Every structure is written in structure tokens, then in C-alpha cells.
Image (cartoon, rainbow, N blue to C red; front, side, top):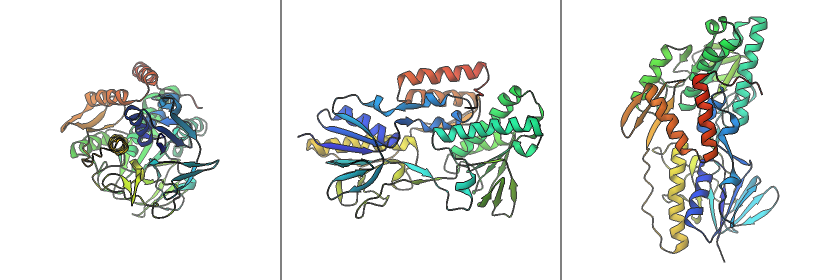
Length: 398
């Protein structure tokens, strides 16, 4: 009888676990559960939110990753796991498994701050990206009628990679594309993008060279950097800061961290700390990886780390099933770090060497194209990027 291997989650951790298992285990049955039908290439969401790429081109149907007759996709919501009975409960059925990989990812962390859930936009999925784009364009439409300059104030909360990339893209999108489209030069004059960061410097988890390049470009942009400030509450059109400052704004986009997402579990499974081999507690047949686990401070919660963890877990799981257990231990080493800072601008460190400017921007795009897990979508993204070089970004308000 073939083993039943279940994967929960359709993000980077889950999808790359699926792809690796199909390569390594030809005779086992593999099932992947996800509440959505599509995999989203989240590193490009900030570009989708500002017309750089089409939202359709950064999503891939999970079913398209299925390459064998004994691999199955189940679109359902997992409501619980019983590690003793080896069952997964979903909204529609119970499912038995022999091995389980939990890769449920993360969600925005509101830190239970008053007003965040009610008044903020987020950037975790396609709907979020479209909501941000609609809000930007809608505000400019209203400004052209009312000339209310407060409509041109946008606030991004969070000085990490997501917040920084989005702030630069919003500034670039409005300054270079939308101001021309609306034929109103006063838009550029009154545009204000606030970037609120709790620490002294942005990109605090990244190398100093990347921080310095980003901070240098901040000074030449329309971005108002507010550091050493925690958000204490948010109401409609107002952000209250720990310094006592009251920030008036027409839109707030929350990018201030993430928190793990785990389905309800029986026993001691409802925790994020995993063993050295990514097994959960005493359950040697259950693994967890990606953003939903805590593997130590040296492993970031990002796509690159999730993919490397997926490769490690599938190698180890394959050795367990085949009876020749090999566990060399997981050692995380980032291939490099890159961040886009608007059109023709980026910063990064590749193999220990700092890069910046147009060259870094080209490297950033090349690496993402190479890593994108769909050949047809690679070409579509390439077309989107090529068009945006020689013409304006997409301005449709859908």
C-alpha cells in the first residue's frame, strides 16, 4: 500500500514541498489542501498593487503543479488535525494520512492595536493588492474634483521589506504614471507618502549597505520617513503615534509584521516551535515548515527560507519512507538579499557582494523570473515589465 502524504498550505512552503515530493517519491499518494485554488507569488504583490504587473500573471493554479496520477489537490478549509488518529478534518470531510507537512504560512499581525483591522489595507493576497490600487486611483479621481490635498496622503506602516518596497512603488506610481494620466501637475506637488517605522532605521534585519541605499533614496523621494514611532491607534483618516504625533492620512496600509497561521490541533500540536528535523513535538510523522513555524532567529519568515525548508523536509521525509534515514541537520544560508526601490532602483547583497542601482534592479527582476514556478507566466511577467519600461504602468481601476 502506498503511503498517504498530506500537505496543508498552498504558499511557497506547501507548493515547493509538493514539487519536490513528486520528483523524489513516484509511488506514494500526495494530497495538497488549500482554501484557495491558486498559488500567489507574493514577492511581486507590491508591483501588482501599483500597476507594474497584472494580478493574473502572478497567480498559478495549484492544479497545474500536479504532474503524476497519484497526486491530488483538495480545495477545502482544514479545521483540525488529530496527530494520534492521523486524521485531518476539513469543512467537508475527514482525511487519513501517514505523513503530514504543515505549511499554512502567515497572516498580517495587527498586534491587537485599536482600529488596524477596521481601517487599514493590507498586502497579503491578490484582493489586497487590487484594493490598494483601487484606493490610490479613487483618491486621485476625487482629488481632481475637490482639490482636497489630504486625498494625496498615503501612509505605510512598517519599515521591513514589504513596507519599504510598497512605499517606493506608490511614490513612483503616482509621480511618474498617474500624475501624467490625470494631467494635473499639482498631484506631484501635494503627494505625500508616509513610511512609519518603529525602529531607528528601515530594513533593520538587512545588511547595512541595503539600509544606506534605501535611506539615501528616501531623501530624494516624496516619502516622509517617520522613525522610532509605534502606532498606538488608528481611526478613520488618522494614525496616532507613540510620540504623541497625530498623522492625518487618506489611506493606511499595514505592513508591520506577520504572525503564523496554524489550524486547530488536538494535543500539543498547537505551537510553532519545531524540532531540528522540522517534526512537531513527539510526532515524527508530522512536519511543519515556512512562516508558520519558529526555527530560531537565524531563519527569516520569507519565501527563500520556506523553499529551502521544503527541500530539506522532502529529502528527509524521502529517506524516512525509503528506510535509509539521512538527517544532516538544516543549516540556513541565504543565497542573497534584494529589495526593489522603485523603477530602475534596487539594493541587495549577492554572495556577500553589495549591489545597487539599475544593475541591482535588473538582477532582482532576473532572479524572480528564474524562480517563478510557471513557464507561461514567466513570459507574461516579462511582457508586463517590458511594456512598463517603454510606456506607463497599468491604470485600470478594476
